[in-house]
Each structure stands twice: as C-alpha cells, then as structure tokens.
Image (cartoon, rainbow, N blue to C red; front, side):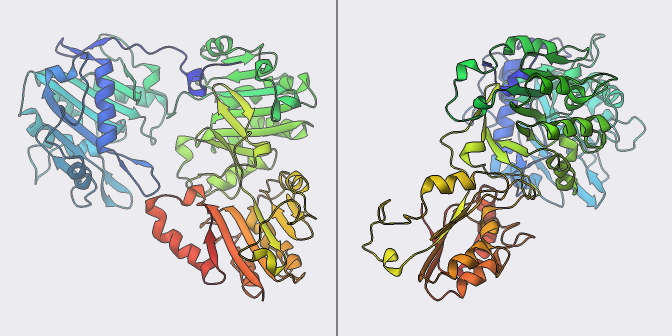
Length: 597
C-alpha cells in the first residue's frame, strides 16, 4: 500500500532547501524565499469570478535580514506599509494596473485591445513616454545593500518580454536591476502557457539568469534555483508546463472486491510499493513501471505519460499487458492531468488504448484531477473530453473526492458520484468512498395526511411499498438509474449512454416523465426532493433544462413542494449569490421552494 501522496509520486527528487548564492555573493535562504512568496500569494494574489488565478507581479526592496535564514514574514514585521487591499485594488485598475508603495510595487495586466496586452513585468521594468523612470528603478533607488525580489505568477514570455528583437523586451530593465547592489531573485511559479518549444523557453530563461538569479517556487514550501549561472544549464524543473506536481499516469487491475465498500486495505497493491514505482517513472529513459497489478509512467520529451502507457511501439502496450493479467477485475486508469486535446486525443495509440479499455469486461474507469494547462480556455474542451467517455466512464477527482463527468461546465467543477461508485484519492491509492453521500433526487405522491404537521413517518407507515434497499440498488447504476415505485420515484446520476442529472431524469420527457406517471396517481400530496440544488448552467438554463418539468408540478392540484439540501458545488460562493437567487426564483415562481439543512 502506498503511503506517499499522489503529488508525492511526482516529486522524484527531493528539492533541496539549502542556501543559494546571489549575484553579489550574498546569500538568499531558499526556505525564507518560499515563505516570502507564500506571503505574496496570500496577500496580493488576484483571481477572477471563477477563483482562477490572474497574472500579477510584485517586486520588493527590503532589508537584507528579511532574506536570511529563519526570517518568518508576517503582517506585523514585513511590508507593513503596504495594505493588501490597496495593492489588489490598484493592480486590477483597467487604466493603469500598477501599485507603487514604499517597499513594494506590483502590477496586473493592461488590456490594450482584444489581442494586445501589456504584461505585468513590462509595466514594472519598462519606461514609457509618460513614465520615463520605471517603478522598478524608483523602488531600487529607495535602498541599497538590501534584498530585492521580483515575483511573477507566470514566467516572462519568450515572444515579447525576453525576445532580444522585441521593442517591448524587459531585458534592459533586468540589466539595470543587475547593477543594483543587493541580494536578488527573480521568481516565477508557472510557465507562461503561450510558450513554444522547450528549447525556446530554455534560451529565454537563460537571458534572465544572465542578469539576475532565477528561481521557481511551485508551492508553499518549495523554491529552487533554475540554474543558468556559473556554466550551469537551466534546470529542467523550470521548463515544465505542468502546474500541480509533475505529470504522471498510473493504471491498476485489481480484484473487483477491492472496488467495493469494506475491502481489506492491507491487500491493496501490496506487490507494487510506492518506493519501487517512483524511482522508475522518474528516470529519463522509457519512464514506465511494469508491476504485478500496476503500471505507471512519467513523461519524456517525446511523449506524455498516457501515451507511454498506451502506445504499442510495434508490440503489446503496457496497458494491454495489464488488462490481460485479470480479465474481469477492476481497472482504473488515472492521470494527474487530463489528456491534451491537440496531441493525446488525436493520437491513434491513445484511441486504441481507450478501445481496449472499452472491451475490458470488468469494472473500469478513466480518472483525472486537473485540466491540462494549455486546454483550460479552449471552448471545445468539453466535446474533446467526451471522446474518452465514448469508450469508458470518465471521472474527475476534486478535493480528493472522485467526481463524475457529466455536462461539464466551463470551469469544470464537478459534483460527487453516488457512494457505491465513488473513488477516494488518499495517498497513492484508490479506495471506494463509503460515507460520502452522492447526488440523487426523489419525488413522492402520498395521501394528504402524510404531509400534516403531526405525521411521524417510519418504515412501518411511510412508503412501505418502496423499500430503501430496492431504491438504492437501482439509482446507483450508471445506465438509466431511475427507480419507479408505487408512491416514490428516484434517480441517481446517469453516466451511460448519455450523461444526465438526476432531476432531469425524473422530470423529462415532459408529459411522459417518471414525475408525470407519479402525479397521475392523484394521492394529493407531492414533494420533489434533490440533495443538491439544480445547477444553474445546465438544469435551469441549458440543454437539460428542467423548468418545463417543474411547470407540470405547478399544475398539480394537491399539496406540493420542491426541496433541496445543499447548494450545488459549482454554484456556491459569494460571487454567484445574485445569479443563484435569480435562477432559484424560476422554481419558486412555480412551486413552493424549501431548503432542509
């Protein structure tokens, strides 16, 4: 059984936290650098309405001791004159998104036209006719024999910022900073998503390192030098475009019993230990681990991890070999990042691998956690990912909970599966999710007295013709998970053949739906209940609109109510409140709307 986290599988070499030398021979402590960058992220980071990070850059000029080992930055001892509210307000200003403080400057991105943007690094480092002395120069003028750090969420772009032939390059600004007497660090978190080849990126980052020390901080406790100085090459860790840990993929073929509640965890993948897997997928050869019940791959310059596991290379692929080891087991193919649209999902090897998964007769699932960075803003993302769902059930893990892909919204925040088929990402293994309650909907049509104030429902007097065991067995299925009973109808989430929400399954087709049949029994009291509120993007507006079905409930002559417990995950948050009220009002205008928490 693996004890490392999934992201831990990818950290194939422990990143050191030693002291790193600056250009002036002074020391910058990498642990302190990590804490400083975390301070920036906690106080100055900006996000859009979907909580996605937006590009920004900050630069500081502080006393040297604030870059030395042991310094713990806080609001009480670090950048005390820089109010985070003021900083964030200024860097989202559309006219001039720049903040100029005492020890800190910061910038967002200025939109000039639909296709022309002035990047934040350029706003800080480059002069203009109106502003001949740059914000960075003014900052450097405030203090010498100090510590200066410039942090950018994304690495400076190679096309403009680091292009020696571009009139808008930031290289002169870097050269000017290089001459300043201070400890220095230019730090980035992510690789700018518009980069071309790795070689172009390597050359561009080298131009930074030629002027000032270059670092990358990938999370709260991980900063490392990108090299490029003292005849050292740019480190490969600073060239990858993966955001949350290094990309990897694994596939398992285990007994079916290990994909059900209550199995013995001690027997799970006992012959494929994490310490054996991680060193193999970290090597720069074929990056493939072939074990007894598990295969795994990292990435190479020639192929993504999914490709490496599915490609036959003139023989049998690692995946096909795994499938043959147990013909009716439980197969889960997991990739940290969704398969890339332009390469993986157009590749015959991967499509062939998906076909082999489709033919597998046991339990099967294809799972990913994050959207591949370069695909996030593609408007055809949903259609491309549905190619996978044509072969095998497709799921996404969100916050360590296995989530089902159906009707994916643009931001791709997905609801939970029913408990019997959920997957929990815990450490480096998958286990069935037991106590988690999955989305479902139910409606009842009962005698009026069973909705009176004094009625006490029990298994002996309420819905006795619809035992819970029968209901749950039906709604936990993937294909047509709809229960039609005597006084109750219910539905889980449908994943095959066409994904559909539980509310939609009960309310459609209008005039011939399970709800229609239930209402026709005329017992005079109907309650429609859904665990999660109907989603705004699909259920209350989109292709799977349930409002016509609710109109049918509106016309019912008996007691009626529409009830939910939780706000659907994707619709939560203060930014969605007004829109959510507007959409829930569509239900309230038709039938009594209640929430039971």
